[in-house]
Image (cartoon, rainbow, N blue to C red; front, top):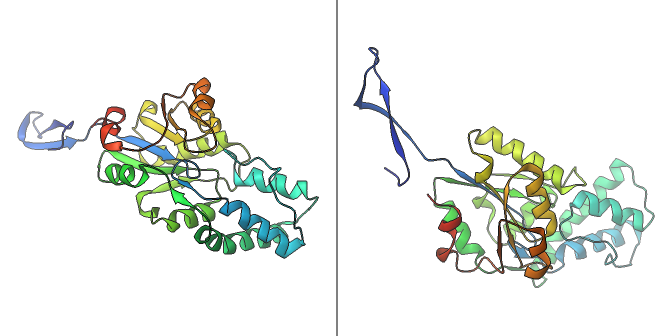
Amino acid sequence: MPQGAFVHFVPDASGSAFPGMFEEIIAAMHVLLFDIDGTLMNAGRAGQAAMEAALLDHFGVARQTDAIPMAGRTDFAITRDLLAHHDLRLDEWQRGRFLSSYFQRLPHHLANSDSMLLPGVTSLLELLTAREDIALGLLTGNFAEGARLKLERFALTHHFTFGSYGDHHASRDDVAREALRQVRDRHADVPIDRIWIIGDTPADIQCARAIGAKVLAVATGVFTVADLAPHQPDVLRSTLADPETWHQTLWPR
């Protein structure tokens, strides 16, 4: 029997319970929702470069997109502001063509940038995936297709069973609310204090608070420990390195 489980004896027809008939109830699960950029990986400006290439290809826009803030935001909001910045008003068909061009270019830019996995990520995901009492999902501002391509770059896709993405929401809080609905569909009995968001920006901390979840903030993106500390995450780490030494203290069996 797994550590942390307990036995519930099922009564027979007479109402008596005995060891010959029982159900094993596993202790309450933890659900961990991971951000991607700055948390699992550094994409090395690949996303920004792919968007700039799509702008050049479709609209002849050669200016860089550095004026558009990106950290912690959804791709829906970034794309909206990017197009407005260049005074581009697209109908749905044109916007779809632009995004298709972005997705086509993203693998090339990921492969030819200095993109890399961040410290401890591989070990942590392997440890967590091996546990039956933990479910892993994504809570990211990436478009769903962009998230898939980034995860495939480092063979991480198989670790995650579901995700909430930035295709339709300008606010990361709304992405978190969608993630919570998905958690409730899959693991209805998981208490809210066993749902964790892992991310690298103040927006990750804020969206966790919006749904009442806990949050582990990690300073592997553009925000330092000093930047993140005032936002009062439940746990603040400089990296996810050496997970063998700490992950079970946060998510005990």
